[in-house]
Amino acid sequence: MGMLTDEMLLESYHLAIELDLEDDFISLLLAEIYRRNLTITDYSLQ
Image (cartoon, rainbow, N blue to C red; front, side, top):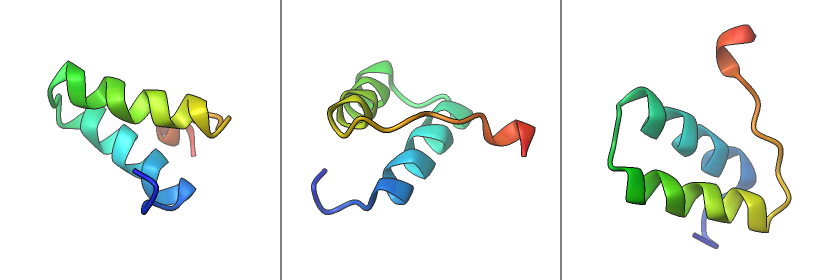
């Protein structure tokens, strides 16, 4: 996960949810987002 930029990580998280990927994969992404102290934004509002 360290190779992903913050932006790529957040985009991956949102895309994983949109594509309804495995919960375990989404949890891994979310754990890394929390570890980096990033804020999840709702792209649908932009």
